[in-house]
Image (cartoon, rainbow, N blue to C red; front, side, top):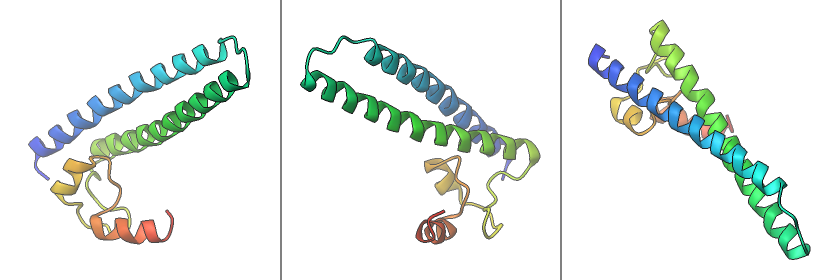
Length: 117
């Protein structure tokens, strides 16, 4: 991978990391606001409970993505970025443009999904 491509992906990953951190902060604030609401009836409670579950699910998914981004940034530092963790072949540029924190090439991703990794 060329240095310019590596720099592009590093910048992309850092920007996404920053966005996720902002999102997670916003989710935490929304959950805190939901906890502070006065609930008058079961309908209010059900609505707040549902909102809380959705916010938690979004937060969990974003925390997972943030972790994967941090791993990808570390790989850039140590020179192992764009190498598939399964077959150790290069991950295609087009795949990285779609998912810059990809751990697997497209073929190995399918295998990993079938095996539930």
